[in-house]
Length: 46
Image (spheres, rainbow, N blue to C red):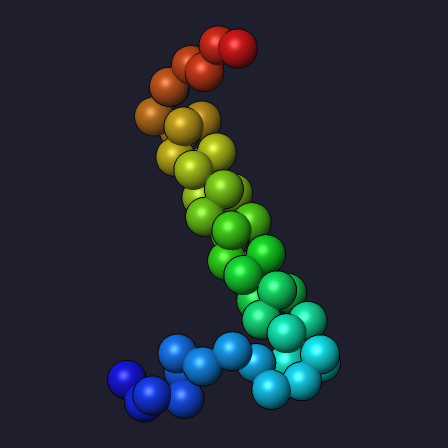
């Protein structure tokens, strides 16, 4: 990976973009987890 990918964002707009990307990835993984739990009959009790 290029060294630039480890540096902090250069602007506020880039930081917002990174946060949106991270939130989208997290939501995608959570949705996949729910789908797998429902299709496999996994019961989650709180």
